[in-house]
Length: 428
Ligand code: SF4
Image (cartoon, rainbow, N blue to C red; front, side, top):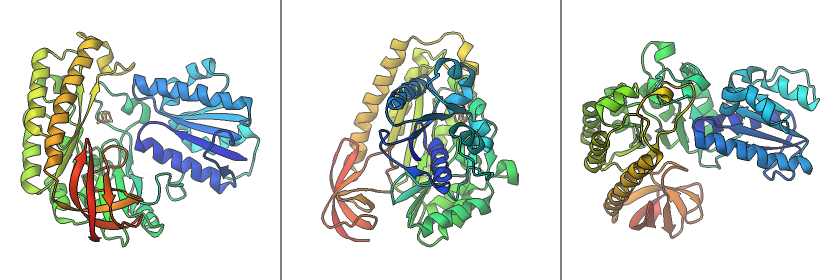
């Protein structure tokens, strides 16, 4: 049978989708990209915030239309199902099977029951057999699952469970397999990457893990995302600084800068600790890129809190910044907090931060003109520097001879919004 997949949400969810594709492939199903051809459509959903839930429901309804044509079975998995399985069963009879994240151990058994296919094998989702869906240059490696931080606005700990690290040896085996397949860049992810190892080894071991991965031949770039500010250790900073294979890039979701709001969010940072961290990273690592995400409109956020955040953005001049408006999520502590901020105020604050960051970004981009940077060529005429995370940041448009899947050195000649423009100097 032919199977098509839709993966929604974050890169951590994408790794699950890739493992599901691997499972079907191993059982001789044909994977197709066009939903019109698919006899089975699997939708791996996100249910993190309101807009993600809406997107998931719309996608399910859109895919259900294909049941009028070729599609015989619609299977829905992931975070939305984890949160609302019973309601979904009642309201979406078009779907043949819903599988929660916490039921993935019996995923294949459940799928076989529905599609009436039985090979009597005890199949499980498997990192080593997953089918990489992100092209030929880079792949994600998920090093842990779940989160114990219980930020008061976030549903993840209730959906994905407690923080659980994978063993170093298993991750290295996966990294070696990816290197053998020709992947040059590995992107290390988890809900809380810098906590890696604390649950199974009693101490953070991300620095050591990155060091070990960097010894693998063929891997030329390693980066890690979602670093919680308070668990960025000096050891990790030193490793990033001294290891040529690790991109000098820190993705640190800071959320806010006002101590009052950070406390209400149940974040462990303070405004001072965040400012100190930024200063330290810039002092220790020349040309370090810092990316963050901020949230505006959290319950109780006053004009003063917002002004403090605005001034912080002005001061920090972060290389990259994403901003979200607070989304009220059932089951989280912030859901019932008093002084919810009016949606129009949230939007106004969001626009103000993003307009400021746009100017900062322009200034930041100008500084790169004339620099020579190493570029990973992703497709003819387009590549990425160490400053760009796929699907999140920009790209560099390149003039000159640059073979796909290779590294070249490019001189930056200009920029357009969040993208750079450059000329190939020499193959790196
Ligand atoms: S650190 Fe906070 S925001 Fe991030 S996944 Fe954990 S609870 Fe959610």
